[in-house]
Length: 141
Image (cartoon, rainbow, N blue to C red; front, side, top):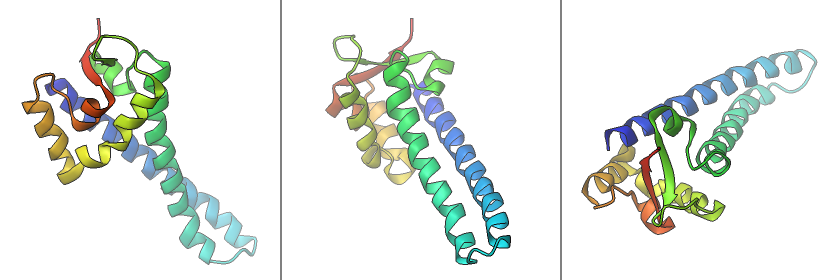
């Protein structure tokens, strides 16, 4: 259970680093464009648009595509020896990863407290996304 909490923190930190780097990149890209004569409003929009795009794509890549292509483990799960399986022990379909990601909106409420409590009190240590998707997080062997 502690590994799952650590995994969530590591992934959150990775996404925050990516968002900050995209903000810096957006600012650095805006400055030369403004010097070329493009409107200053671009400086107000481009950096934040970069953060939104990178954050969304980063989450989709980390929570859906990467585990689907790498044996059911996000990067943090690989580092901590965890993976996602179906309740029967098989590889989840892409749809299951998508459902887990969608329900992170509920599991992430109150700074992740909803998901943390569900992991602590459910018999298979599942958050809502796992229960609906029919998945469970297990130790990798």
